[in-house]
Image (cartoon, rainbow, N blue to C red; front, side):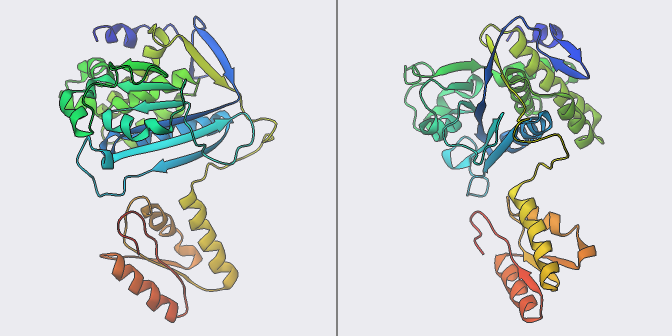
Length: 343
């Protein structure tokens, strides 16, 4: 997810089976019963989107899963700093699981800050994929690295995969005539493609998602899909990734049927609507939108048919005041909060 990227993007030693890209079978495949992956990078690196897409494909594949998105508490801290690190952890298995896990088996670190902020959680022997393009002297100094951790022996106990994610992405997208900065923004899709190859995740759903998300910007959609495919082909062709892994669907724990991939925010929203119906009270949400609590406001605003009223306030105090007033007025009243703006 150099100079060889053109061949990676063009050589697809893979087969397409049922609309899905499949590994060619030339490399070793190991079977695992569960895996914990953590994507980590700067707030602007798209780690939440990357994690969401990997999660959706894992759910459609049939694994049980649990996720833990981790947003930085600060409002967009300076790029490359420890407070600005955002991460997304996913635990998936071939059996019933209950938590997003503690120690990741795989850490994808998009910059030195992401590595430093998360390395303490990574057990010895785990795999670390690092974007070597971001390990510049200045970037390392920002987080207190006197010497490069990729060269000073501090990562000897791990299976480190140094990958120039930015360079590979830019090279793969050279036909789109994008600036290096704009092309580099798709490096999260390159990483997603690499991890999708590594763990045999379906790819069709992500490509359809990108087409829909950027329907009004087909060039951007095409660029992201190209980066995604280049990452997949990089895993297939590079010698650094000699092994891919299979985690079978959790067929024993979950019989064939219709299932929903649900987040905590969505579950809470549905619970509030159900509670208001059970209590026979109208539901009122007074809220100042702030990540990640904004999703509750977005979801509840869709359910006016259940008597739900939502109010987007100018700050947290206004959201609290509106909820208190609604409560005195006879509603089941709620305010939501997260991060630095604790209501």
